[in-house]
Length: 459
Image (cartoon, rainbow, N blue to C red; front, side, top):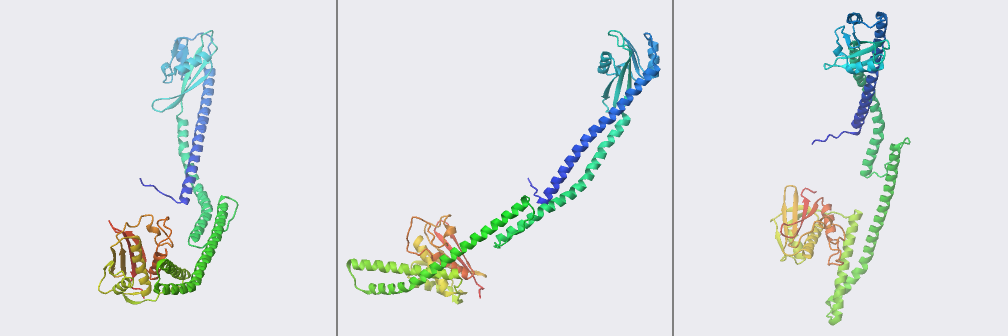
């Protein structure tokens, strides 16, 4: 089912129109009922007064009337005249036309009574009943019944609904005008608030709005200003903390570089010494941990360059198949990796950084996947695509979005590994520096797959 969605202005106009129409209809209906009762009551009172006047003027009886006298009275009064068990009809109405309820009430109460009647054709009229004299005992005396039509009153009353409808329609015009004015007053601060929220979402945290008045909208604007100020303060504080932490990591890394260089030289010398026994084992552990520490420090320094925005890209025309082969050969992986390379594919890239990307991806495949590891290189008109895949268990769905985060470990129970935890993050930064992208996935029925896309037209 199609659902119509209206803006706030339209909804306000509709609400005003409905309220105005409902109020106008209710007032018109009440006025119609009250006016109709007034018209009928006035006509009814006039009718009763005239009937009583006619009876008092035309009827003089000091004895029990005969049927002939009843007929004469019925003709003169244009009414039904009843006395005891006898009656005479007049003016086209008969005794049977008189409502039985009215007959009973007049006989019982012995006073002038009125009963309104609407026939099957919708014609409205009234019967008036009156008595002459008080009668004796159960005898109510002579009774008179006259019928009066309400045709004139009905025509007058019939014009009321049309007039009321016209008034309701006319009243909608000022209601719409008032609704537009009210909607403008409500929408102006709402629009300003929406624009302010968008500016904050775009990073303009110093956005503030002017609050005028003391209503709920003004309170909402003040709340927005408070929220924006607190958000700006928090973000600024986080930026300072992040900057301090990055500077600390960069300073520590640079400070560790010099002693690590000396330590590396020492362990290299120890590696060349013919040591035996526990001394050889201890020297080997020191050598391994020193090289890991040196790798970590170098990776931290590289990351600090990316964070500081000083990582330079030195591009040159590079034959990528040759670069892939050289990267694998330099690390002794030539016989361990299956490659699918074109004969020649020259692209404008930074040779050193692409070598780092390939080395990190292949190293990650060996470390966390399983052989065979494959490297595929292909190109399109717009980009060069490098795919590194392994035959391991693949990446879990909850791990894939985080593999490029720094120091991310899929298994929190795994405290240390051979890597620094920065390899994939550095690879991602290098690809981004080339204007490319890197994505992860799984090969169907096989392991993880990392896809690097580099633009071909980068100058």
